[in-house]
Image (cartoon, helix red, strand yellow):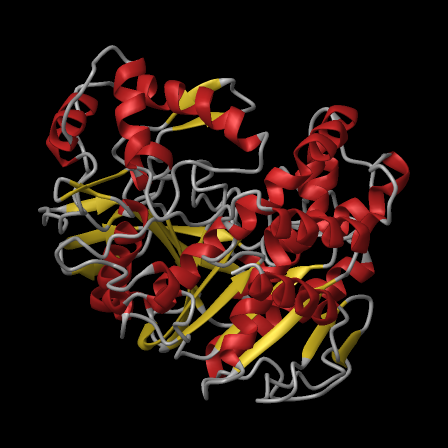
Length: 522
């Protein structure tokens, strides 16, 4: 422990540890580095504050504290308010290497940045500096009372604070502050997208990768969630009459109790494919993240080079738990699901449009288990794919290089379907993660030759992009096909399956159908 590497950052000295890379060799690890003051007490719900300096040498050898959340395995609340820490892993202090920053997903209310979960082993073999970041989750990270003491989007503000810290300090770890790529999956992908369109994050990174999530997905953004604060305070025993009264009361409640109450309501919402504490509009605040209306946000281009894509069967993720009951629920709530997606009321014209959508996927039949493949595609399109295509269409009108992918490789390692015990064919939401990160508990060291080949391909393309802005600068035995960016009239798609192909994406036709219907009900 005492032989670990020491680096000097702006706030003081840090001692890390030397780790064994599962792929061979070693790397330097620094975990639990504070990038902001702990948002405790009256700092709860506020923007993150700069970290204080320390004297002596601070140990950075253990996983950091995490944001308060419900742990399914422990069946308990873990973590707390004090969670604003990041991890750094590097192979070298003497070379200047590109930096890639991981932003985890988890429905905006779960997960954390641990190397045990998101091991950087595969990526580090490609000579980059790796950073993973914690941010406030759930009620602590996204409650918006439309008040300066609780402006919402705290989790996004945390990420901006982390990016600023990285800009000031990453050179000490061998990282190039002028070549920084952010990447994330699911809710993490949506947060990456949010950072790409927020003026407050401008200049803090140079490239971005978003996997299976954008801010415009129906589960990733809402205009307001202020009323939730009032209802939560009432459930906890206080009827409040002003935003400040809600904020001050909720600051007196323990994190455990807050999360317990939040989880109880969140589970009900999750059953309807809705999340309550997520990014929101904040354009009426001073110095907002999103100083434009929601409709203007949807037209904002991403001006840095970007990789964006999704998995072939995203909708499998939404069939968890009681499957027969889930199918009944979708039959019963089909019209409501579409109206929520389009943000519409049930007029005769709207109901006709909904019928067109239903017949497009299911014909005139009832949705049953025999329609499982159609249901997976419908749910995937509705909650993931459509809005990714919306972003792609927007990017085709702008000059910044955008690389679009579809991941259809079916891994042999345990993926999301095994975790959720879903027996449906296809590549599920999250299945690509084992090709980017080593996880001792989830996947172990990859032994299957096809898994290893796909891992080598993914990590090579992702790190090529981080280094050069081009995921396939060279074609060889591993990377067999050139990945072409979007063009003004051609939506090039790179399919990552057993083979690598680049061409037309069949999902684009479905998106055009949805988009034409969306336009006719406005």
